Image 1 (cartoon, rainbow, N blue to C red):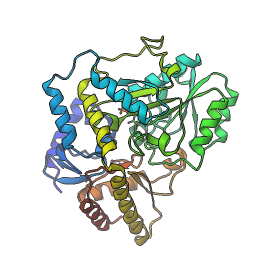
Image 2: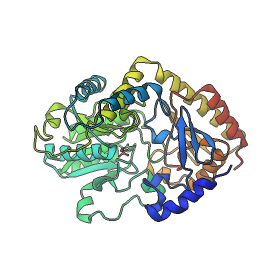
Image 3: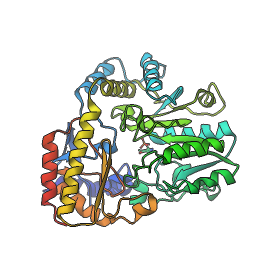
Image 4: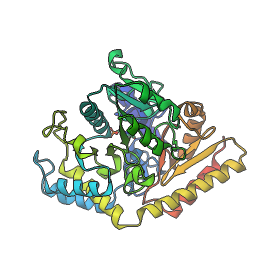
Length: 419
Ligand SMILES: *Cc1c(COP(=O)(O)O)cnc(C)c1O
């Protein structure tokens, strides 16, 4: 495999952008490949190498790259202009659709990123309860803003900076942490009167893939309710991924507030936060919690997101991508057994993750995984035409565009890997 052009570009980029990239997780060592184009399940780099893509832009592309239906919808919208600064009809339609699919959401706001959505959800939770503290789960990732960059997963953990510099101590003293899958740790909600909300990823997808233990989410709901603490489900990954109605449908648990993103924008930038009417009515201009954005609810994003969700509703997407994922996971299991390694693989719906070590139950477990071995594995797979998310702490995504052939090639590639 040749990566000459990518290497050259990276040499320039490193002097122009911190780490040479626009988002840390992309800074694959020694250098990332630069994409020329992508279609369906494949991504092609500037040196002409083609890979089967399981990164899928870290989750949004559930229909694969360059989906024809989404492309058509975007193209039609472009003819009508792409930014108005006024409300549009589709905003009402899309909001109606989401409130129908997410029973916990009566009212919502469209924003531009998942980070923005969690930032605003936390603010409205604090405004509504008139309390200052929040509780998050160790190793969860809710975007790159001040309240949540403490023991943060994703690129923050990959690059060894789970606690970001530049955030005042006085500020993060209001961010408390609990381990995932640990109900006893939630006694903190009883002891501390000043806790506004508990925010969590119902399925953790940013510290490797970590699934909730049986009834964990149901118990979390019960405990938060008992202690008058709002429950926020950060479904930026799991929304429209585990099911149309996200993890809350999958596990049948109703949070007070929900954040969505990634798939909800059909590949264009989006965030959504929503929940109970009486809480959401506190958002400006109907209430006193301020939130605003020039690009929020922009027509291109709305049309791409709406078209994607309609496609998910009208086609048998989930059974296909979940089956594809099962096949891959079975293949990986066989490979692990055949090679007599102490590795494991985990999956849910169309998300899967190979663990270089024991399947984690929480962030501490995830930190024990052999992340350097993972990087060796990553490069070996890339060399064999398979692009995995470039960190042990990320999760692989399967799309509607992944076909049997892709699975076969992926499992063939696996057989060529010697670690
Ligand atoms: C990706 C992600 C975010 C941040 O979304 P951006 O659009 O990257 O700002 C927030 N929460 C979770 C769970 C995520 O996976």
